[in-house]
Image (tube, rainbow, N blue to C red; front, side, top):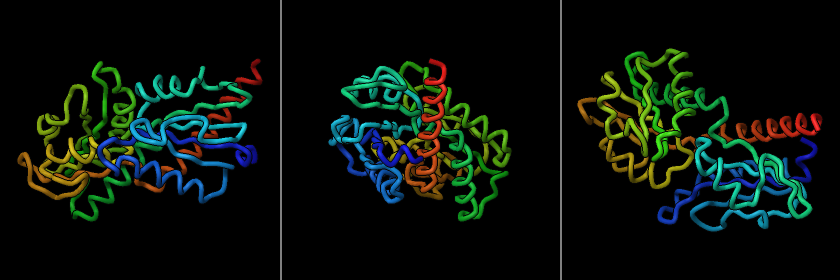
Length: 261
């Protein structure tokens, strides 16, 4: 962590050109990490709105780039590195060293975080997890190839065994979220978006599918069930700790790479 004192952390969020709340989770996350005084600089930037991703936003000679995305999809795997001119996990660029970290949603603690949030909702709603279905909602990909991480999260939740059912649904691939009544049978359903922000998908696309007009809420009677919809993961304070874990993992990866050279 001593090396972080002279380094910058650049958080790259999705943002939204239409909804200001699309940036809120990344802004809060940057503020929380800045408050801890671990890095020389902590800046946020966004794919869909200014400030756009650029290494010019920070001046430190060592830069950690962290995609604040829920999965290692097209943005984290290809588009963000291309925009920043990165050649891989480690890039020496214009006299600076840039370390590209795994996206926030790849952290192994995501399943436990969803579990904790869903159980807290059950307690406040007076329902038993054992009679409730947990529906994990991910973005997915139009090519249909982005389900690995969400399915791993769902498998981990099933292994914990607290909920009657755990199913997955996707915004942009099969099975679609609109089909959720066919995917679970329990009378009570907690819909848990595997999304970082409460942007367009969380604010506009998902609520009507669960009889709601707000990004999260419930209980509502819909589709013959009692339904709750949770907000995005990015609002949880535990996400800051996940970011720091992933920076440590990047440091460890870099150390092994340098030793092997």
